[in-house]
Image (cartoon, rainbow, N blue to C red; front, side, top):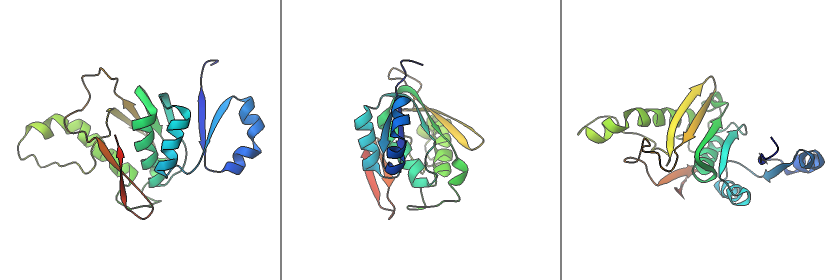
Length: 184
């Protein structure tokens, strides 16, 4: 694909330096840093310009890495109509870190319930289901299969996207378990 722009993120800067010649030969743009750190993630969006058609998270396997990457990159780095692929979700219950509340697969299950029950939650007084995690802005669909899920972002003009119970701020979390609000 001659007109494809590829950005790749790597935690280990020494590894990138070692393979710099091959990376340049392949015409890959590199980002370096810790994907559990929201400041780093926002810097990646700023450096790359965001607006990606596809984001593939084949990175770290801890909850902080998966959850924080999703929140920042899906909301701020993925363009409307884009897809976000998140793999190795089977690790989210084995590598508990951060506040132990944001177990990635549990968050995703809650989002599936939010999407499936959205209109009922808004229209039935006294309805018992209360979501634990509010939907990320623009989340259209979630398709899951063995160990991975694909998330589709709404197009700007999409009338079938949830709007009534989407929070404009989402909590990301740090290693000490304190929440930080990230503008949506």
